[in-house]
Amino acid sequence: MSPKTGLEALLTPEESVLLLIDHQPYQFSNLNSHEPTMIVNNVVGLAKAAKGFGVPTILTTVVEERGGNLIQPLQDLFPDQKPINRTFINTWEDQRVVDAVKATGRKKLIIAGLWTEICVAMPALHAAAEDFQVYVVTDASGGTSAEAHDMAVRRMVQAGIIPITWQVTFAEWQRDWARTNLISPEDQLATLAHGGATGVVTAWEFQLLNTPVPDTTQA
Image (tube, rainbow, N blue to C red; front, side):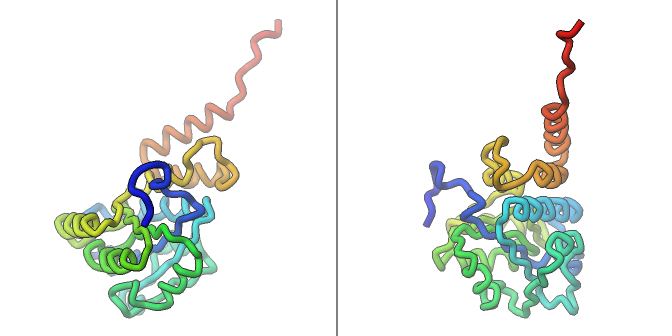
């Protein structure tokens, strides 16, 4: 189990693996804990961050023949990856998913999905019992009601699972704005475009930092 305080409590790209669960039309149709477009924005921002930092990302759907395919913005980020299509409600009961996570060798498992109270909580609780440090990205996940989402988060916290938001995940991976060995400035901006006002202001800062200062010393 990873420390809950100190520098080692923070996420790093080298230790992380991201599992995205059931961001599909059927799940969005009964998403009532959040505004659906916000969840789309946040999960795509999270996925872009993971891709930019080289964090392995595993995509999974449930009975997509009836529930619909993975939303296109996520599939477009990983065009060569076919989501693991399950019948298990609990993703962690599908051995293909477990094997894919374990194959990365990463022990900090970051989960986001729909719905929080079922398809996120079940695998989070299950994986946490198997020596994974589990993080749930609460603003890239959602439930059938605000109460369902909130109760699921509370239940997971009681079990030692760590709630986190997508921009905090990005910030812990980034850690230093001068860090360009893992993510390019272009990927930073593509990710921060999903950050609302924070993203707009950060893009402006990048613009200012890259704008040459006029030389006024010449006559």
